[in-house]
Image 1 (cartoon, helix red, strand yellow):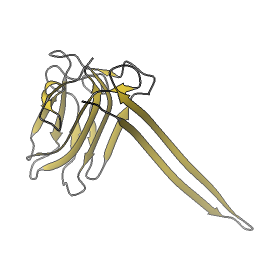
Image 2 (image 1 turned 90 degrees about the vertical axis):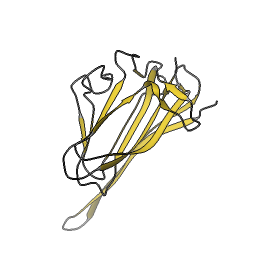
Image 3 (image 1 turned 90 degrees about the horizontal axis):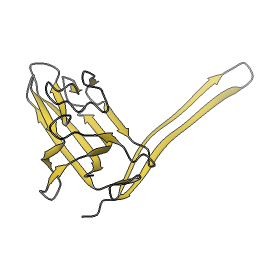
Image 4 (image 1 turned 60 degrees about the horizontal axis):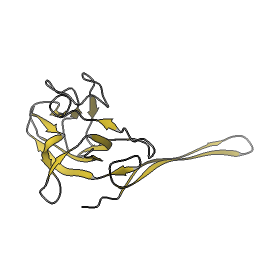
Length: 169
């Protein structure tokens, strides 16, 4: 299988302020992107997982990054390095989606073992390693491979989208 990826994020902001005789303007176009070809070295990725998932009220799940997730073709994925992680909470959620801090064998390369990230309804998060970064975010099969995702509260389910791009070596 061949994998070709573009991981990107952008912020475009325009500010204006009217003064006595002029109007000043500040424009920001902040863009970062990484092109990844197929493979396992620097600037490459060979594994992709993506899914829309739903958690019932107060539920949690551990996404096992090493040997349990399935790719789009039904093949088992074992990530050794994560090059990009993107998570988006559905705008229609009532509760937040909380990422990180699995009880056992947490994947701690990005958020540390106790760190979490809370995505309120409609919020998104993305992180990616640079194109020249061969290391990415390490995954340790059986020791540091669980990405916990939790519904922050009772009463309603939450839906989230997840995209993980990485390497098998």
